[in-house]
Length: 234
Image (cartoon, rainbow, N blue to C red; front, side):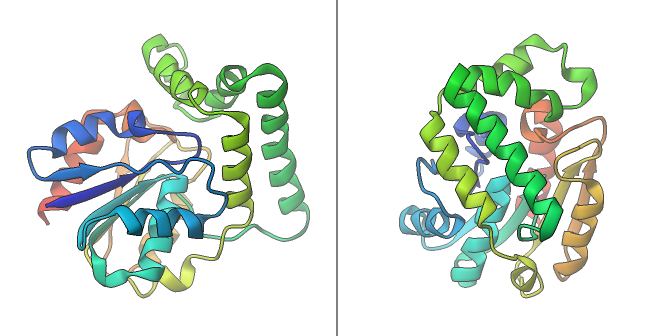
């Protein structure tokens, strides 16, 4: 089996480390690097250029949005789909858009003036379950991953997210087996949003991971790998 695991914003293969290790017995694993691509559409096209002819596709966070764009372009190539701690709506209108832009640009300014590690140390506070903030190895693995990126890459990927297309029309047309997964305490991409995603995808399966925030694959690696293995075998 061919499996493509898509990382999220300023993440790399580290975010999928446990899952990639678990899946290598089941097939070939590919993890794309978005680099400085500045749109979800470009990320999806780059993924498709390098991916096998047919593959199972899982995306985390922004990677889930990239996965939806892959489905938009080539649904016949995706045998199974898993969307983890992600979203599907475009940038909202009015004050909500201003607030999101301001929050993202404030983080970008911190990255430019103080470095990616300093930005990551601030950002991670809302990305994991509150009980895990004292888990030094976990926090270092997340912040260390972010620190491997540059402010220029961060800026490009922020642009991609702010210009994100509406995924709802794509979700309603998905025909392959699909799993929607969310950490119950994800403050960035809420459980209610994942219930909406699961309702839009015909015959999808919603999985909720207890005591888990947004960085589910790193916070609860064994549980996520087990859920994804069940999805692969479905």
